[in-house]
Amino acid sequence: MTVDLTPAARRMAELLTGVADDQLQAPTPCRAYTLGDLVDHVDGLSLGLTAAARKELGGATAGAPSGDASRLDGRFRSKTMRHLTDLAEAWRDPQAWTGMTQAGGVELPGETAGLVALDELVVHGWDVARATGQPYTCDAESLEAVHGFLTRFTASGATQPNGPFGPPVEVADDAPLIDRVVALAGRDPAWSPPAR
Image (cartoon, rainbow, N blue to C red; front, side):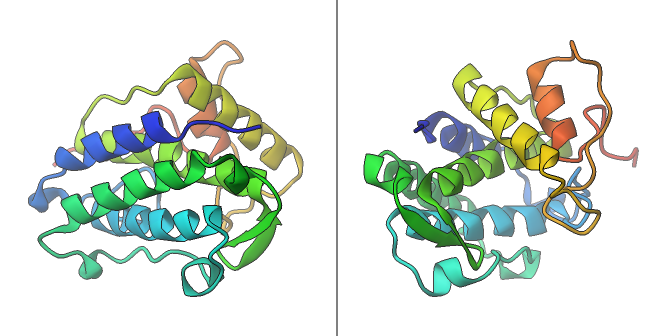
């Protein structure tokens, strides 16, 4: 299975253009991160998962991406947007989806790493949109692929309070697919920033 990451990467890049500097300390649905932390995390995962696609194992694939707003500089939007373009391009190569690779210090099949990359783009795209009050749209192919990935992931019992995803949130079976996706990733689909 291969999926084109371009629509999700492009949507993330568009969302970053709507992030104002004075929003970087704002909370996000991703409990551990402020918006600035999350933007730094997206940049780091873009670099690491691009290297994973290219099977360039080493520093970028050996550990989890950072999530530290203090690392952002005045060029963070253009830099991260370039890294998102590179990420989508790297996963367009069918060879990226084959064999074994490494991401976040974990050895895994290329196909799984590609789905991890897509999941990160979709779920964190939703996080950024919610934190900044921007609308979030996602193409159907990406949503279906991420839903299938998260369904398998949560069925395996891999969700933990301190893991990559919190416990799934209950939603109706007929809820919109994006709500079911973020709920599987431990987010409340009704989350909104606290009133100021």
